[in-house]
Image (tube, rainbow, N blue to C red; front, side):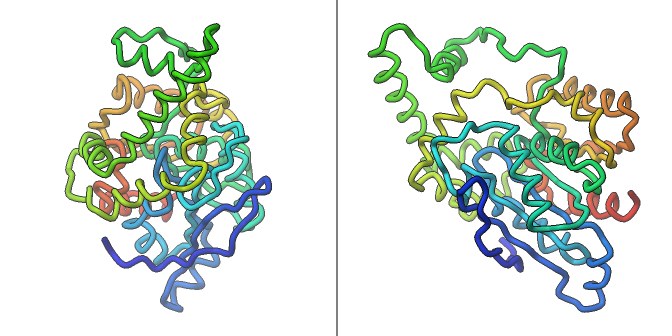
Length: 316
C-alpha cells in the first residue's frame, strides 16, 4: 500500500448529509501550472468500496492533474441515511453537485462498476462541463434488456425474493425477510468473506491485502450501514436511464477500460461489445482497451490503468 498524498476536504453537505471526499494536487511547482490548465479528475468507487479503492491511482494521476475522489452517499466515510432512495439517479445528482460546488471547472469523471454508471450519468448531465468519462467495468443496462428476469437457480431466486421484500404474509414481510437480510449482511462484512469475495473478482490477488479488506469492512460498522444495504438490496436496477440513452446525451470523449476476465459481468464479452457499439452509434469519440484483469482493474493492475488513463487524458 503506497503512501497517499490526498488531503481530506472539508465536510461537504449534500441533501443535508455529510459527504467525505479527498483532493490531491501536483507536489512539484512546475506541474502545478499544468494542473491549473488541465481539467480536474474525479474518481467514483463501486458498490461497497470508497475513496480508499483509488489508493494506487491518486498519487500517479495527481502528478499533473487536480484529482478528487468522493465517497458516494451510503458508502465509505459518507453519511448513511436510511430514508434516501438509493440508486443511479441519487448518485448521479450527487456527483453533478460536487463538480459544480466543489471543483468548479471542467472535469473528467472516472468510475468503476456501479460508480461507472454514476460517472456516465453525471458526465451526460454535465454536458459542456464534462471533459470526459472513463468507465472501468461499468454497471448498467440497455433499453433492449429486461430488468426483471426470473432466475433459475435456488440461491438467485432467494436473492430476488429477499430483494423484492414484499409478501401478503406480514410475518414473512416484516420479520423473516429482514432477519435473512441481516444474516446476509453480517456474513458479507466478515473479513474472511470479504477476502474470499475479492479473490474471486481479482484475477491476480496480489493486491487483496489487509488494507483493502479493512477499507471495505470498516464502513459496514457505521450506524445506518445495514439500512443502506437493505435499500440497495431491495432496489430494482439502478433507477436511471439506460446506457444507450446516456450515450446519446454525452458530449465528451469516452474511454472504456475492461477487465476482460470479470466474473461479475454476465455475458461479459457481449456486454463489452454492446457498450462499444452503442457508443459508436451515438457518434462519441470512444476508445476501448481490454485488460487482463477482473472487475476492479484500477486496483488489480494499477500501473497499466494509470498509463492508459494518462495517455488518453493527454491525447483527448
